[in-house]
Image (cartoon, rainbow, N blue to C red; front, side, top):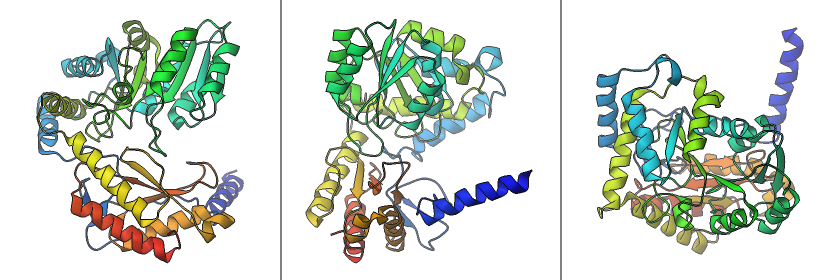
Length: 408
């Protein structure tokens, strides 16, 4: 049987390659950082494509906390939480996360993908409805699909369409608005203040995935919820420990007490996945220590990453590149010019990324189905670990490559 299946799979792979949609994987020859070694380059290259927003992936205090937890609690639990996989450190981290993000409780998961995957089917059934932004992360989309609730989708950021969906669904038992806080491919922030206003008017719940904001967006790093001034108005917050908050793995849902309690009873990824590894728990507690120290007036890594983003955005705009506006360290550099205009934007993004690596800057091209057709881009991500000299070197490399490929 597999011979026939192999032909089908091989044909699909050939189609991906022909369309320029194949996703390669480069091997890193060392730890994550602003400068890394990859297998395709003899010399270190500047890394401008990681989610390491605060530069904490290899921070000495974070690494040391992971070592200490490894010595004290072991490598893993070999169990799920409700059997024998809950340590006191897990409970401390959940309490700290809930307090930091202004929620009543928090529940740890092996990833934010799992947090979103186990959320909607736990809370909602066929009597309910989820209203979701069209550009929400794949984990939200997949999580909603697992639920029996009715699914409504509104065009990205279109609050008139959101309001119409809320009007049309007034007969439902529960209505839940689901949105990213920061959208991962564009770096734009959801208008959470206006979303919460609509939720108040129509008695709807609000769920925000803040993976690309937790720890560095907002005055004290509480994310897009803080940035938009809606602390206390969002009912459910999901996020990750794998980006700004240490960069290893793990996710969480922070929410009202009843929501968290129900997740512990019925959320399948929580019930049937091994407990988060002790070194990740210990390192995550150290990350929260660093963030809360910064909240007390110490120099903020968040300020540095946002300053780097502003510097890069300004210089790239001056150079003539078409970038999505905003302040976030996600900076989409859109593919434009003769080749992109004739439908070759996906392959162009891959070729530009390869040329940038030759220039000593590691970035990645994104195209359909990760982004809509015709909107291929290089997604640049700034970090607090980048120096101003590194940012300027990246802009210079982009300028040389951009001229070669007629992007500017």
